[in-house]
Image (tube, rainbow over all chains, first blue to last red; front, side):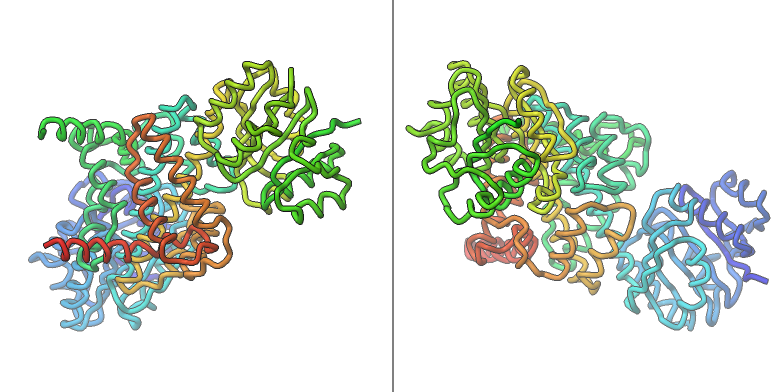
Length: 304
Length: 304
């Protein structure tokens, strides 16, 4: 019989992952603050954790896929939280894209009580999670990794062990999100230039991915959205993108690595958030190439 | 019998393209200031043009693949140049990545004498040219395009007609080179961050292209070079990259499109040119992420 596992956070990513674990024969106790998210899982045999405390079993495994540092800290360190209940040998496996500092902090406090906090960040959109084809970056205490490998093998195709430093998986994931953001910004700038000079914006980005130079989901998917100026299919909403780019900048400042590209993307994402509907995809930042300049120029004129 | 064509500029890109034309049965009159470049073509039956003027036949087609604006203007407008000899109905097909202004200027002067200047910029490295798998962006006078299509069909797999505005193909090509440069810069910044935070630089970039997010020659090829800090295989030397990014900035200024990403790449390419051996690949700019900041920080301290 497979193990019984706690699973907290059944949103766009958590839900397909939890379903895959169920289908692979794991027993799940599931928790989410939004009740309706539990329905598809309960229908497939998951057990509802009435309260957060019910999700954790002493010495067991709890998986979390929550949106940000604040939520992770709440479900972990709160009165009914995972840390207090997981006990000796228990493992908290965190899949979220959160800050490296929080990862390091949690690994420390878990370690002090003889339990483990592991990080496994994942690369892929909800449909990739559904197809169990995620890339997974695992870091933390070596001894505990063996216990979570069977789960991770259900969830993804590529599993990379990045060593003992628990925050490395967070940094790698943030680095990749930064690279996606820069690709969006670059396509936005290039498309603006091409269009302004008489080329067709959508064709410009289409020809690019028809060449052998640029392939893959980022240039193909976001390229189409930027080319057609259609940001309604939110693969990743502006607010989430802004959160990640802010995390990147914080990590970079701490590590004393200059990231001029991240600063520009940050500025354009903020402009997008201030002026657009927040449910739009973060690739809308590509449209703030021109506006930002107009704004800067206006500010410069006003300052004269 | 196939047509006899003039071909000027038999460097890394021109040579494989000219060879493919020969093999497809075109007769070629070839010219290059560097004699030794002609050898492989003469061996395959090309005719040597002793002087530049011999390359052009009245009413014929001359193809040029030269490194920059200056060389293109010299072979075109000089005393023995193509313009004076090509006559009524002749076609000058320019494959080089040069400035849009020069393209527009040349199209105008050719048009005034009843001949045609067409632009066909190409995307792909020398081995792609050798395999006749280039992507080709064609723009200029519609009536003249039919005459060069049989040549282009020999050289590439994708041929895009971008309309009558002759400089559009130049702009599209510059836009793509800008996107390659931004990808290099972004990988450099991200790799610096990952490495500084304890991840393995080469692994960080390898995992990226193993994911479905980033595929294609740019992330795979340059990613490996940046990951391993090996810039010795010059796919595209620093000086050429710098020239193209400077053209991009000039076009952007003229079109009033802000390109903050291009400005940063320009700065790092200049730093690379000033301090490194000039035969290195332009992806070496990825290593100037840290140095540039150190320089800026030093300047700020000195200014205090």
